[in-house]
Picture 1 (cartoon, rainbow, N blue to C red):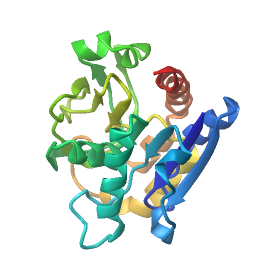
Picture 2 (tube, rainbow, N blue to C red):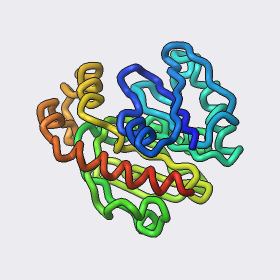
Picture 3 (spheres, one colour):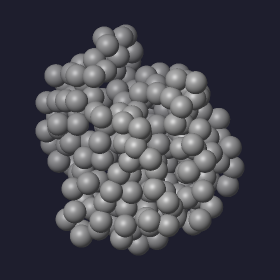
Length: 232
């Protein structure tokens, strides 16, 4: 399978997705929008992965590439490609599909449980995950579930954690399964001011980085999830 990812900032990489792709012998290429790289033709890939970033879907005036990226994601969806959005990526997909993106009632940063909805438990893709699991989070915005999409996961701090669309060919994840220890360290180093804010769902850097078992577990869950998504 040919996989292409879109990266918005240097410190949010595909991490475990890259590792999974290489181990499964999938080809993987990327466009780093923050370096001004151009997006390839959509016929050059089978799966598009849209990564996270600190900007919002509404920041078109600050990031000139956002408008083009939204059109590109929309084109990939219309062409029946597999499209996976993570955090900002999920918000971009929701926006493209007509769902509103807005500030969540709480910032959610660190390790917090996510629960599958009843629809998620019945999903051919999300059902490979436990009914409750602890992924990594780093977000302040959230999204509406777009019309025609299925709400598949929720957390205490954020009702809409995931959705699927077009029979599971399009997936939005607000949470992170791709994060490894180095990428978590990079996030903290580049966004540490957010960790200084008061919030019920904001953990301290040492608390985040000490959860070595959580990093191992989410890599295992990512592999399981991506194996199933690749089959759709």
